Image 1 (cartoon, rainbow, N blue to C red):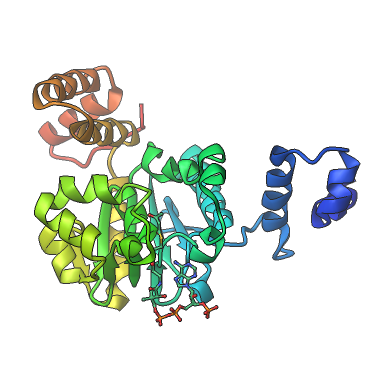
Image 2: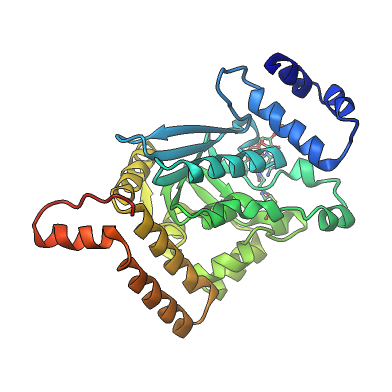
Length: 303
Ligand code: CAA
């Protein structure tokens, strides 16, 4: 039976005929299934992203954007694979923290221009183009971007959807959409202004100029700039440090920090205090404070 299913999904025409349907949903599932089986590996592999459990406790979910010939341009298939990978690691109880990085000389050079070139207004509106890009920003677990090279357009936006960004000294950033007759569509105009203020946001979005990792750090877009060979080890070290804390408290803390983006200071402070209060309902809060007083490391149980 598995062989029959594999044959069907390797041939979308047969697959579609089999189900006597040509609906968008079926075709999307065919594409996803084909990507999953494309390597012929015994376990499920994705076409456009590599996933790996890493770190000394194998509790870090590493996602590598893997379309290096196109500088990891964020085609629809890649974004769907990325969403699936985030979903998989989010559900995996062993995984504490996620890291996203890129294969080759780019983190991601933006949305796929070749894929977008012929789209019409009606198609992007009715198809909700880019609406599924939000998955990374909705992840309940912390996500670190390890920016190894170009982070342009959607690549820069993807980085800003992550909670923390480390960058290689060689990384280049920018929102060059204006140069190809469009504007950022996945948070560029909204998130840069919150990090770097209006003047910088306008300069970046209206000029399309690229900027360096050092400038990105100065603006607060990334928190650390590292030599290329230290980027991933340092991101993993940070992910492990975060992973040594209680998962439940880390999740609550992430929620509180993110609330600052969405609300007023007074609302945010009230929300934070309530979340702080709610930590007193957890065993890990009790364990953390007891461990401090007893001068021993805490043994969090994620409860
Ligand atoms: N979409 C599709 N293909 C892309 C791409 C993109 N965003 N960026 C690079 N590629 C492809 C190139 O077409 C090229 O493919 P071929 O070999 O088949 O020609 C390959 O990747 C290598 O690229 P280059 O030869 O251009 O490499 P380079 O080193 O000379 O230049 C670069 C690198 C400066 C990043 C240049 O590729 C570039 O400017 N890319 C486009 C950046 C961009 O405009 N991004 C914004 C996209 S729109 C967007 O992201 C909207 C949004 O908000 C979501």
